[in-house]
Length: 361
Image 1 (cartoon, rainbow, N blue to C red):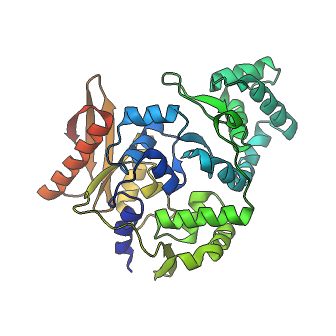
Image 2: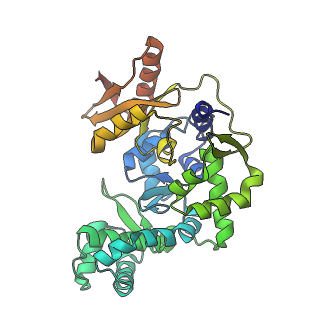
Image 3: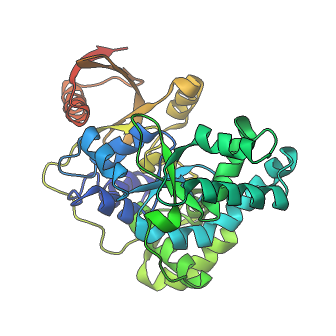
């Protein structure tokens, strides 16, 4: 195996070039956790792994609780399934709390303050009530917790409640996100011993994201490299591996087969697991491309991928009945390349249910 072989294997393992998965929950279950601070970008990531994924239908499914959005793995939002949320929190929340410890001290959120806040939020949400973050902030303010009605103190108190398994995402209220009590929104599940949970997370990561290294796993999971090595020791007999440039890459022995005529081009959220799921992205983006993407900063929302390689950027602007899709390729394109990208644009417009107006930059 060479570094150049990795992108096509990852496309297969991530079900971008292999058979689509049957429903959105199965996509999330296969990937285990899908980074979702960009909610609509995360919906587009799900749609690319489905036969027909439409944004409005995925949004409606989220509102039923079939998918949950919470802080897990690293200190950011992810989609997870109801059956996975408890053991994932049990495994990764202590590590995220440790990452947040400096902010807890800076914001004067000691254990007593955090526990008081959790009790207030529990009372505010009980009996099936769904509240937005500002509404939770108002409840905290009325309970006498200072400076908790907005800003970073509210952000970290709500995140703490997510990590402690008190609350999770509820149904959206219009375009607003709400929170629900986890115990009222998700059926109870038995706890797993840590090694069992670590083995499951490691197994799933390398099955769905391989070929990847232990450093990729640690970066994705938020756990330590030592945890990654322990997890690999528990499941390495279920995996294959290859040495490339002095690194060991682990992957499933029988990756999903590639479909006939797989798509050559994709428009991917900047947080799609195809790129965000790895510490080392040399296999899918050259140093020059990575530098140019980095220069875009917060303006970067979507990536242009061709034959497994990130080749440029993309931006969408929604109008009333159309969506303007701006394409910026950093590399020269052949007519066949352009046609492949047009096919990806068409799929993106079907996901949005909007007619696309294409602008090349």
